[in-house]
Length: 405
Ligand SMILES: *Cc1c(COP(=O)(O)O)cnc(C)c1O
Image 1 (cartoon, rainbow, N blue to C red):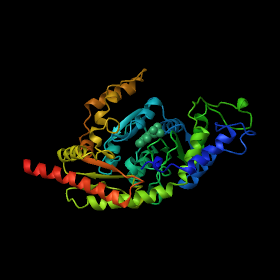
Image 2 (cartoon, helix red, strand yellow):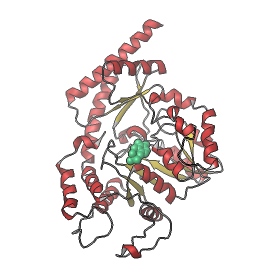
Image 3 (cartoon, protein in one colour):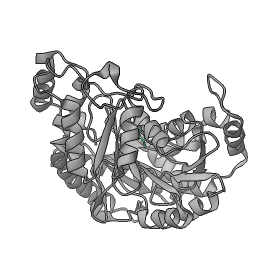
Image 4 (cartoon, rainbow, N blue to C red):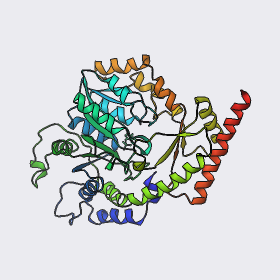
C-alpha cells in the first residue's frame, strides 16, 4: 500500500526543482519562481489521472474533507451519513463544519450498507459520505440511487482507495465530490497532503478560496484580491506537492505490484475453507492495497490474530475490532463528546445517543475481519512465506477451537 516504500530519485528531483528557486509557496512570486508550479502541476496530473474536471490540493486528507463539506454548504444542523468503520478523520471533518455525523452500519463490503443508509435518513440529512475503505469500493450504484431519490449530496471519502475504480470510473470522481489523502501511509504520499476532486466548477472555486483564507486567486496582486467568504489556511506547500507529483507518476506501477502480490496472497489463503473474503462490488476495480478476509466467528478471528501476534507476523495485519482509530467500538472520545471546546447542542445530543445505539450488524462484520496490507517491496518468495505463515496461524486457531468444542 504505502508509496513511501518506493521513494527515490524521482521525488528528490522534483523537490530539488523547488529548492533551486526557494519559492516554497504555491501562490504568487511569479517572477522568482522560474516557471515552477508544482502544486498546479500535481492538480493537473490528478485531473488527468482520475478523469475529473477539477482538483484542489490541501494540507491533508482531513482538511480536504473539511473543505469540500464546507463547499457543499454543509454546516450547523445538517446531518452527514457515514459508516461505523472508517478512520477518525471522517467524523472529525464533519464535526469541524458544525454538522452531525450520523453513523450507519457496514456490510461485508466493509463499506456503507445501503439499507442502513436508507434507515438513517432524516429531514436534516444533507449528504451521504461513503468511505472506500482498505483499497476498495462501496456499492456506488445503490448509494447513487438513494441520493438521487432523496436529493442528497454524495461525497466519496476515497482517502484509502486512490487508484481503485468502480465500473470504469475512478473512485473520487463518481459522486458530487471526492477526497484523497496523501499522508505518509497512503497509496501515494507527499508526507502530508490531500485533494478534493469534483466535476462541479462551483464546488471547485469554493474549495480553491476556502483553503486560502477566501482568496479569489484572480489577478497578480495577492494583497488586492477580494474575500467573498471566510476561509482558512489549508494550503499545500510546493515541497509537498513536488513529492506528490513524482508519486502520482508511479501510481500505475504501484497498482500493478499490489495486484500481483494481492492475488498471490489470496490464492494461498483460499486453501482454508473457513476463510471468506470481502465482497467487492466491482472486483476488477480493487486497488489491492489490502486483502481483507473473514473467519466464521469473532472468537476464531481473535484467536487467529493472537496466534499471528505470537508468531510475530501481526505487523501489517489489522484486526480492526480492537483498533482504536478505525472502528466505532473504540471511539469513546466521540461517544463521550470529549472535545476541547464546545460542540453545538444538536451535535452533542447526537453523539451521546451513539451510546444507546446498537451497531450489532457492523460488529458482526468487523469482529470477524482481518486485513492484510499488501507490500510493494515483497518478492514472490516473501509473499509466499507471508501467506503460508498466516495459513499456519489460522489453522492453529481453528484446530484449538475444534479441540475445545
Ligand atoms: C487517511 C484518511 C483520512 C485523512 O487523511 P489525512 O491526510 O491523514 O488527514 C480520511 N479518511 C480516511 C478513510 C483515511 O484513511
